[in-house]
Length: 228
Image (cartoon, rainbow, N blue to C red; front, top):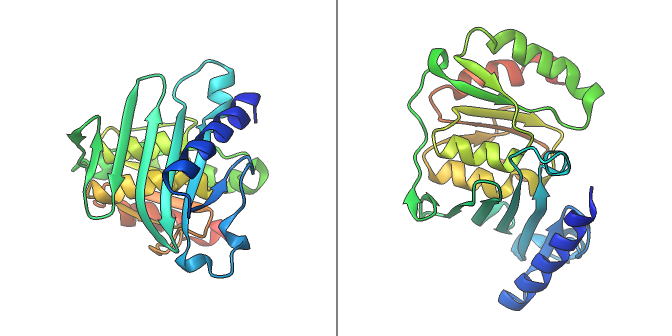
């Protein structure tokens, strides 16, 4: 966390309160109340905000890093927007409306695993995730075209939606990391599940997002006993 995260979140929350006063908030830095405190959160509109996704990248002046904002109602993601600061690109989607970057429609790739560029991230929970990432790398490094680590979950998801990446996998992340990007992938024709393959991922901490073509191949690893 940096002071930029806190200051950015405060500005975003203040602006969104004016835009939609009835909505609640789930925020990474905790500057606004959680929807979990409401009597019936399943009916409550809620903004899910990551004010700076890729904080470590930002501190080291190493792109990418982004602002991620989603509007949800229960388990439904209604809209999502991710602003990639370094490239000055705005990715966005709304439920049933498609995905876009700066007004241009997004579509996932058609790559099979041999031609795929995979994003295998490294979350902060290193000890718990180490056997998982080792299994993923052992399985796909040398089998897929190549492997990358970006340091920003939100941007990795947007790049899957744009066809720049073919898959992104990560565990031990928060709703603010993936909520907006997950909708952007889905609306671009991709597939998003948790590590077990369930499409009910919005209350969990794991994400598998792909062009749909290679999704089951990724799940063969993530749904294995090593993940448990």
